[in-house]
Amino acid sequence: MAQMHLPKRVKIVEVGPRDGLQNEKETIAADVKVELVDRLTLAGFPNIEAASFVSPKWVPQMATSAEVMQRIQRKPGVVYSALVPNMKGFEAALAARVDEVVIFGAASEAFSQKNINCSIAQSIDRFADVARATKEHGLRLRAAVSCAFGCPYQGEVPLAAVVDVVGRLRELGCDEIDIADTIGVATPNQAHQVMDRVAREFPIAGLSGHFHDTYGQALANIYASLECGITIFHASVAGLGGCPYAKGATGNVATEDVLYLMQGLGIETGIDLDQVVDAGQFISAALGRRAISRAGNAIAAKRAS
Image 1 (spheres, one colour):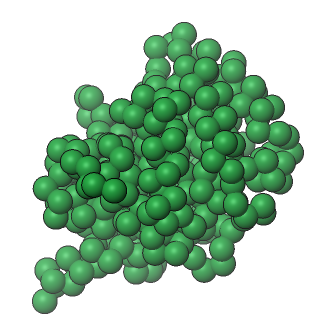
Image 2 (tube, helix red, strand yellow):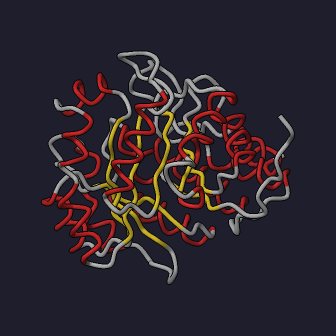
Image 3 (cartoon, one colour):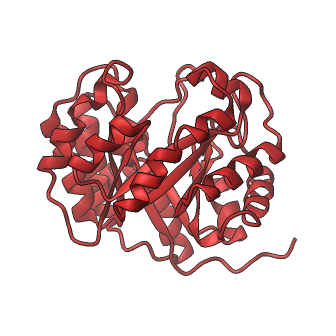
């Protein structure tokens, strides 16, 4: 296959404050979360996933979401997103002045049944009211398709299932759809295949790649997606967020590593890598451990030498 021209600019969505921190066992103070979001805002991210309005019973770490959204220093033009599971969550997100509502559906039937006790179709139907309300209030609507490349319960996920979910989410009026490798099993050929196919269901400018690094393939999958014309990627500062389905595995790809890759490819992001390294070292110190980001740790070590 002839190499495609790579995009000149990409949008990096920082998901560390939500997707990254929600898996942490120890309670993280709201002060720390606020400072992390503020540091990321200053670093130049155009979109930060900052909160989640799910029941604290299910995700205790996100219980301070309203306080965090209230206290962050917002920068005009930056989109602050929150995950919203239902209308109760939507009302809370609205009160917290989020700019973008994030809904979710799995491409794996087994995953959907195991996690939320209903079929994929039912799970997406449940979001119809949230989607309608989001649009009525003039907010952005983003959807995540989890297990688009593999499932911890059923293994392979048929491409047709991914396409079907993307079509259903498109009908809800989503502005952006994330194609997520929840367990980090994808390899570049598969990334190519899936991205090429879903781009026929939804405008490619609104598709994003959300890759986990469980098997060390995330950057390679991002490169494959760039070749397909994908220009939005999700990443988590310091590689925050383990994979709950693979013991000891890393989760989200580290933002510092993605930025280092883009810098090397001459692709603009508008984000200051040095400031992101600082943010990664800050949150890792707050959590009492070393950052998972290779580029972040290498740059920090070089500075210290």
